[in-house]
Length: 588
Image 1 (tube, rainbow, N blue to C red):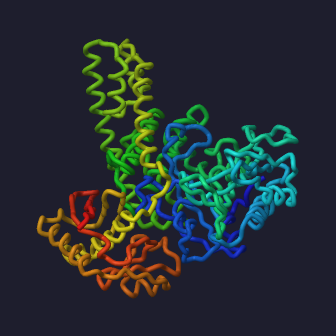
Image 2 (image 1 turned 45 degrees about the horizontal axis):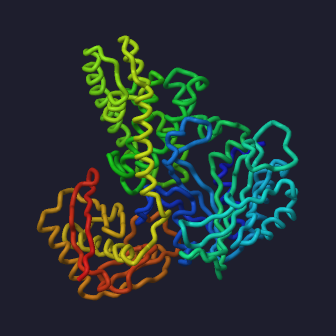
Image 3 (image 1 turned 30 degrees about the vertical axis):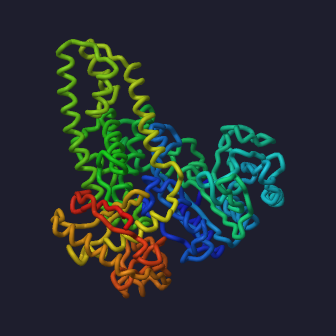
């Protein structure tokens, strides 16, 4: 069983839902706008949260897309057959339009009629119910009517209920599983049977949970679905290793060629190189202009590139050659038809990876000098020293052990693992701190900061250069951060004048108005936007008096007097040609 080879799974999916009167929305950038709670978009539904919460979507009530996603919480698992840092998610949504009947019917139709999956290989789970929310009888009966046997429908509680955070819209979901094994298919479906792989999840948001734990029905019910491209493609092509599917085959073959080694026996390193370089391509191509650094998204990018280099070294690849460019070229060519930024920023991608590779190669050399100093003393290497070589110089423990063995020295690998585990826990805690709470809450103060970014953007155009444009922003309840293109460090006078102009506009009490219009009309009217390709044909334009007009998803205050006093607290470099301003809003 296989997907029609000439048509990509993404195309099949989108075309199917277009035939069901859905509108395709562009993939959001991989670095989310104005959402400080996450480093990257981690799921297909994440950019749609405002619309699932009730905001009107300019494309209408039936939507579909393929979304770039990135998760780092299990980065250390990459190297097995199924884990990836970057992945693509297919999704279709109903914003108060169709519900369970159509959603389940179309899922079944797509799987069995378009992808030609035999129905006997499918099984599903439905929500069993609890003391506050009843058993999902509607989904259960619908699956039965579509030919799924009663014995292939499992009722669960924990795995079949979805909510954003602790409160908010929530509801049961129904998950669809595929039996991925040559064994005889069991008569009864057991969700814990690892031969079954989840391929699609349909979430039905029909309730609202408040902060006291009360659950009430929503007047407008939404559907949110998700299907992973990598996993589904592997299933359809009959392979148990995602990296053996058509998504990865040419990349792995190129790595085999460069390393002059077969995939078999070198799977882990080749998977890590393939996965990490693909992810690095998408981060560095993103319009947010992320560069390798020691914080936030830049830290993840640096870690991915350096880990790929370490595994290239492990395969005896000459890391001073242009080996990474040969692999990147294949990745970019494969995804260019779907993601415009890979065409726009292709040279940026090559430059980012080349620079980081050269920097890391120098670091490795320093690490060798450090190791040789230790070795001269003919001392065994304790866990702390081994970890220092890893953490500071990027030495994998395998390299330390290999060098030590040549000199007859011992390495405290257990001590290293202890330090490494503590480092992992710290990183995970830090990451979870960044991720906790799910998505930005759009609190009152965050809404004020969001409006202030528009005023700052407009003021910089007046004071510094009319060609300045926003390159990224990050908002928390404590401050705003604004990145913009600029070829010089702002002078104290420029900073003061910019701050004064923003406060002048705030004191003028300018009304903030919103209007929907065709995208071309909005651009012709002078409206600015950060990522033009992500906007639909009908857009939302926010105007602040006559000083600012931008395409934006909101939210904003009604009048600038609500903002308080604007104060710039820092101006610094963010990347080459990109400056960053951090500012706060103070009470008057």
